[in-house]
Image (cartoon, rainbow, N blue to C red; front, side, top):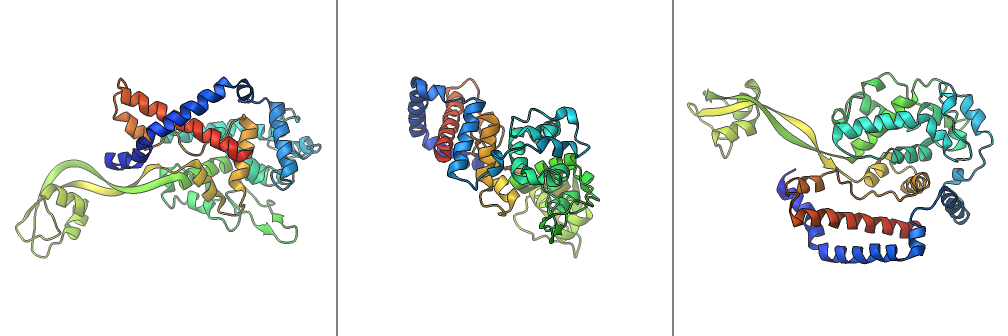
Length: 367
């Protein structure tokens, strides 16, 4: 992404800086000055459970599995090898079943975060798994075999990842998904039939995170050059396209090194070029919220709301879809500003204030 694009994307925010900064300072310091607000800033587990139960009373169709009794949960999980029994936590925690996959989730998230220099929160994946396959009726099937639901018949995530299509090879290596069976729909039982499934939970989690990142990725094309500059004398009948193909370069590269403003050439013209190829790359990332919405594909109109509520239950915090300091273009902007300057400190503090304002807005919306 060019500096021009970066500055253009952040320009409106910077112009609005005084307003955001002033409002943010008042909001944040006002809350800190209010003991009642401060006491409610980090509710304990009991308070969070109660808030979810109240939400269930007001919205009985929303996240009903959160407050369902889990009397048969332990037996259901024990019956589903190869889940390790020593990973089963206290069933007083309504989401204890997620802990059987905690190490898998953390491992996969860490791998993608390192590869792409992002900061995806593992709890986002836990919340998505809860919504995708966490209901008690899904524990023996979806949760066991395909917790991220990437292999359902009619969806195309599995084959797209396995075959490295749609630039997914830039996200990661998903060859492990080749040969995995799609899950058919049992019309009589009205549920997914996992009787012939060869999906493993780790494959589903790895593929699901990859699919989420694919939906978040902003792909673009660039020219990668290599080697020394070479010369070529145009012959009769030559065209830039043919020369580029034969010399394993691109028309753009020839024009760049030869000073051409158009594709017109004539015999005897001396051209210069380097070996080059066009390649796709990840220019930046969309918000996790937009990516999660596309991940769901519109099958559940309340998908984002349920993921956010589950995330809040798991962490006690609101899920912030809006900005990640490791993501572009903010990281690019900060990288060109000296860290010793007032402007750098101002930008960092400004976006921190905006993040806190977004968090307060989430609190208001979720109430």
